[in-house]
Length: 537
View (cartoon, one colour):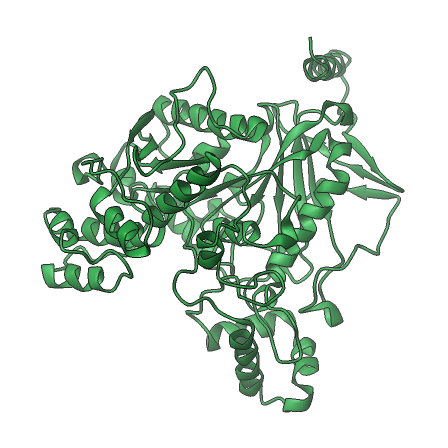
């Protein structure tokens, strides 16, 4: 029997003995890091230890606002790691979205408490099934999404206990957002402070995860939406080399094929912000640093309400666009999984759109407007679905297929998925396979207020097994699962997660052939594939 199983058996015996003896509690898990001792908690109904709110850098406040994360100076002999730290400064955008989703499924908005936010937010959380450092379990590090201006590391679907029960250590990290994390000024030499935070967290993990039972040589970073985009930026930067060994990118937000922001662009935005405060040019940065965090957030949100905070070409983390890094064969060669959901932008698409509207959306894409593209989507009986298909193919699906094909040609290590599972009932039919719908399946954390059937739980078991197997070996395939081939342009096989996992021909073959042809990639196989079918959504 392995040490892992022995430790779980021993823990079970301790718990049972405590119950039999009428003990009120069980000794909490404890980890020693240098001169500091961290006391965590046992996750309810499991043998997973969870350590919440561990600081990995100094609070980025005062003079440290808009500086790279600095090593933690406040050393404490005893630290309680039983409560999540505040989320990074943000508006209620994501919280409001969660509350609206709960309402759609018939629950109260009050199932989500108000969010505690702070500028002091560089903390991480760890779920581990075994704190024996000799076990060297693979590590999965989650980077949350939210357009790089919202979201937090412990959203309900991001808790790592279910994955940890499968023999991995799960870490979720916080990083600075919006004006605090993706911003600059002429007096600053960087713009990607949120990315530097992610690197600092990964460096902390390399140094310390062994004390929690983890293997620093088997670290997989995984994330969704902007978190996935940030992962791709890390893969494009030599500054992150050696800090991770595999990547999973869910609903990646694009590769910077359009013009990426540059350091001068971000510095000018800093100048513009200072002007709206009326600050003197010569002392603007110091005055901006003195503005209280809540006031700065509100003022900035009013001035730049629609700005998308993407990684900038700053000459340090990124010296050129991510797309150019890919094309020049300079992307990190680590194995990766990438994919998207069936209805990423359906909720924001016009259900009353005319053929002329659909044509306009298609023409507005960078690569999808080909002679065969319009006939492929105009036949869709649902105009909103046609628009969603175009936008998703342009921003996520076809670039993901291209990246996997390109890297597989070089390293044979890119896998593509397509998530199309729709929950049963009216609410499920309304939201469909929305942006983020795969997360409760990946983490095994279905919300109690959602319509969840045996089919959903079984699919979650399959997805968790693929993700964990990838973290363990750099390949998602296991004997208990349907075979998932690496993605190649001449076979175009993706793993579709619908009612169950099934390997299918690549989705949206017409739109993606146009994309491949436009960017000069290998020719896609001429296959009908499987497109988004509104009758099955």
